[in-house]
Image (cartoon, rainbow, N blue to C red; front, top):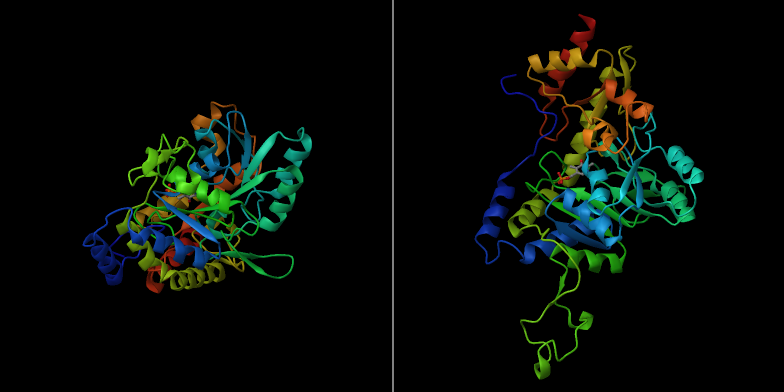
Length: 394
Ligand SMILES: *Cc1c(COP(=O)(O)O)cnc(C)c1O
């Protein structure tokens, strides 16, 4: 292989380029019609009522905790095996992150650990849960929702890894990640390694109209231009002219977390191929699974799970560091997802330490994310599989 093989990469077609160029030649670079079109088509794809496009997935998380009124000292539960932003969004609002351990079989936040935390604390201690559809495997949100309702908690689903993914609920129905049936808000990222690439970009989906309107306002400085919503008196708002065209109100402290029209144009174009990409990811996963099934040096793997969206394909292996280095020598850039969040120096300074979450820490000792992206060729995958087998069976 002449070019290094990354663990993930974007796929940009002629159509993608043409749609971005078209947006660049239009009247709007930002705050134009492509943003709303992207929101509507994304909501339709995911199956939610509303969608709010934002600058990136981290902004989507921040707007989520803001719109749910996370305050100083509020406790929120999440998984340690995720990108730091899933936890940081609680800190942005002054809240406290409580990590609960993962289920070693699914690598997802373990609902039994969450339940134990809730049972052991006085009611009202926790405000919300941020489960993550890690690697593209959907959390069973029906179960989380039941638990959350018992304790009066909200749920923000971090679905960055799982657009198009689903789980099967107790009625045998497919529940698509981000469709809002069992969560208050769900968030997505359009970073180039994710399923849909915008360069930078993010989305919040919800079925809750009140939260939807609040998110729109918070995304753009906390400003509203909707007359029915004004708080000031008519005198202040332009006197007898009754709210002239310049009039708007900044009603709360918001941010500029907008996405641009040309990024939305790219997202729209990518969205059209989302199902093809997902299908290809599932084929790649099946090849990996069948190639490594039963090998004694494979301690665990993502496996074949109905509804899995395979942002990542994970192996748990013996001699992980040696394998990682061996693959790099052969220009295969496998990656680690993730260093447990609670062991980041920032969270250690808040009191978290080695030994707190043994399943997450054990997972981290052995995990390796193999190349997984729709344009990954069969030849490339054969090469990767052959190298891994050669490493252990040489
Ligand atoms: C990528 C990612 C984010 C953050 O998204 P950005 O667009 O990079 O800000 C948050 N959570 C998870 C699980 C992610 O993978």
